[in-house]
Length: 220
Image (cartoon, rainbow, N blue to C red; front, side, top):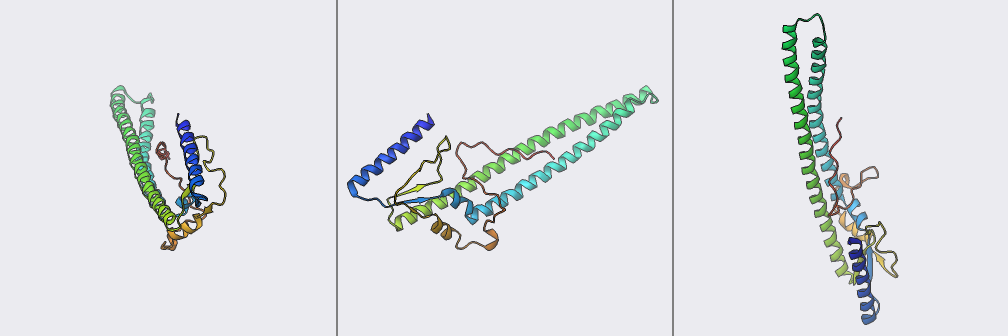
């Protein structure tokens, strides 16, 4: 159903353009690569670096919790060996068994708390990341709109837009001006040198409204 709605919306837009062209003559059309602007904008790079720092902090906390759980697992293994030792009398074994039970329950509780912590922190970070990226995308959209008004474009199409079948919406345009490079230069004109993205930096994608949250950090 969503694919049908998108197809109809695209067909409607095409019909509107055709009608406008028939009435007013040649249209002034531009294209822009929103994905490229989003990825190469220095504020996107700054946001991604901050997210990476926060994700690393979450992973560090998780590793510290895991270290405590592994210490308990070693203690439990030692207690188990003592319980299997025939030289230890029954009274001592009862004491060891109670200690083993207590530490086992502690380990289970700590691991449950660790998993809940990891899920909670990652979910909060994912939500924060999506909101920040959406804010950056809105800044870019406003700049595109302003540039379109200044240059008197009738339409500006995002050539990076894809349908649900991963086919570009915009397959061909005649006499359209690509304004991506000029917009990117404008976006990054006041960028600190250290904030500009480099080849090795991960390039985030534009957040999708129906996208699933990122997976929690892996146990290490």
